Amino acid sequence: MLIEFTVGNYRSFLTPMTLSLEATKLRANEKMLDEQNVFRSGDLSLLRSAAIYGANASGKSNLISAMAFMKNFVLHSAKDSQTGEPTGIERFRLSTMSLQEPALFQIIFALGDKCYRYGFEIDDKIVRAEWLYHTTKRETRLFMRQGDQFELSGPFVKEGRGLENRTRDNALFLSVVAQFNGAIAMMILRWFRTKLNIISGLEDVGYFNFTLQRFEKDAVFRQRVLDFIHLADVGITDVRVETKSLTDALLPDEVRELLQHLATAKGISETEPFIKSLKTSHPIFDSEHNLVGQETFDMEKQESEGTQKIFSLSGPLLDTLEQGKVLVIDELEARLHPLLTLEIIRLFNSAETNPHNAQLIFATHDTGLLSQSLLRRDQIWFTEKDKYGATDLYSLAELNVRNDAAFEKQYITGRYGAIPFIGGLRTLFEGIAYGEKI
Image (cartoon, rainbow, N blue to C red; front, top):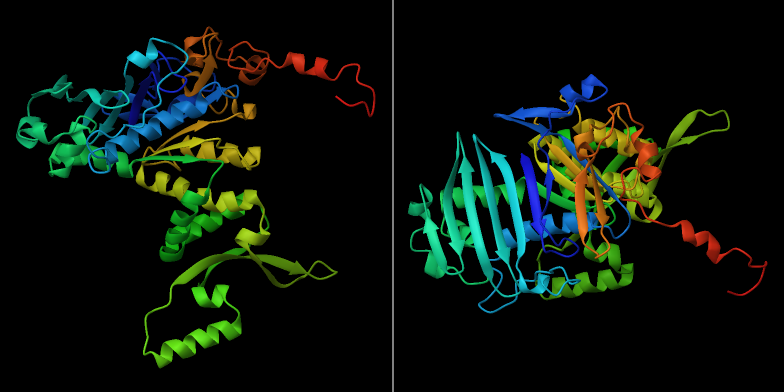
């Protein structure tokens, strides 16, 4: 489970900012939220979901990008780069001082019966610092790296000794130790790879294939996806996978027959590549509204973008709930009806539908979700840029707000900050006559 994530000197983040999923001691106006939206992990009380609000370009996406960068760097720094290659970091560019300082990333998460705190500092070329701690009753350091100096402690001495000289300046020591089968390091990399999933609500191509593969192979999963689609009320009664050979799908009949003839003449019998497509079924009614049959549609060609996203998103959503993972989504509500977005959040904020304590972190502009009957104050976060272009990240729990406040109304009126200042747009069009060129 994710406890907190910290980023500093990355894109619009200058000073270190922390997103925490540890529940505060506040009480919600609706007591049910204190029971449903919070779960226990050892001695900790953690939140099942967190919503991030803010104006366009205020830093919401940059926060999620920072999480994605950390995950990617942990998984690939030791194997995908060579000595001297840049790290790919994007530091804060609106300060002369920030380009002299490293970017900071730190994550704290619960794994098994321990909590781990792992982080690193990097610049364009090298890893300047790196550290790993674990906590049972108290926090214990496993290793500390400062430049080319390493200090190993406890169980990490055995799995990390001798690998210091094998660690390039632009690679993470943790990733190198995992490559050499260090038990703790491998376990942590496995958490990043399998438990932390970061996707975009705007681009669903990447997770469409994941959903498609599980939909085709897992009957239980397929039924849950169908139930999810039925919940969305898009008029689809069934979804099936259609498989065609590549030549059948792309080539005219005469060309395909010629290729088959040539292949036979040459004694070629290799298996043809296949492509898969999704077909949806819609009911057909007669003039008396009696069901008389089903019409087949092509998902990618004839269904709306919203319907395509519903199918694509169902895979990672259901997988996260089944496996107790952490799912981070930018622009969750894009191309989704507000009621469907609401139901998705309710799935996570329920011990009944989320028995494995999966967590959902999402950036959104949907103010309809700002309800005291859906989210606690510590589940609502805001990003806002200061006059120097740096992002501030803070939660509603940090503000002086009553439990029974109208969260949505107060946010829209600017009570919490983190909204765009667009009052001047009207003046651009005042006084312009019909048909007059601007």
